[in-house]
Image (cartoon, rainbow, N blue to C red):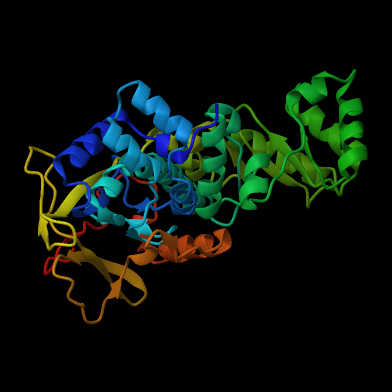
Length: 431
């Protein structure tokens, strides 16, 4: 059964809301912030992703009459809260790091301002989107840096949930992947789609030659032929015989990729197919791609490791209350956690960055709202009064990410494990 975005949440959001309605604090002003206390182990930076999807979900964040009745029938909410939910629309403000921008430990990635009731309900949805998409984008960016000028294809749909596959394709594309195999991502977000044939296609024909001839007849000689169903060398010879020396590419999906690609390049050149590209797939990640840097490979297809964040399937972001008022429209007071290993910094923050000779050098934040000379603010207004005011295209987001990665020093652009390049500190403590 289709559900509204309002139900994409945990029950405790609504049990808290019920208490806020009952004790009269539901309309008190509040500020919540999203940040990561740390990056995934060994990562030097993170990439903000999912903001475009979150905007769409916020616009649909409401509860239908049927959903409110279901919540009331199961005693999730009381009568007063059910009435409050029936007319609910998010009317607050959202500021955030632009999608495609980098973040570091402590970066106030997203700030939500509104009433305590409307802000508290967004926690699960906000974290679900940002944690998944940022995990994929962070892994994708590392793979893009490792691949250099060799294009990458996202092809992990069969390795994750069907909806997550679409989000992952979008996140990979904004981080620099060239295309995806996922058609829904192509229709919904305009991500370029590619795809040729699987091993089953070859096995379905009497001979490999028949399979290649059938594929070339439909897709033309610029297609990519999968040559490792039986024997790679024989597959390459047959591919060139069928398509001619103008064959677009061959794909290798097994074995020692460096060794096999070198042998394939030599054979293709010998057969006169000097412009035929070699595409490598098979459980690739940023580390394998780095190891293949000297191999004669022209492009990569990445699946499982990409859509699972290359070992880190969540970005580890949290959504915390940092300021709250004592009356509707009243002044805010900062609040913060003091629990061991989960300390937060109270007060609404403005984040600032400074670059030196085009290289990102420092990030810090203030809680007094004061402007910083010779620095640029990181957050941008995204939602005002419940209405979206910032909606860049996916191509613009790709450009943001490309520029952000280019602004890292060489040492932070490698896949070698290390501490976070920066840590966002309190004002006067840029790091």
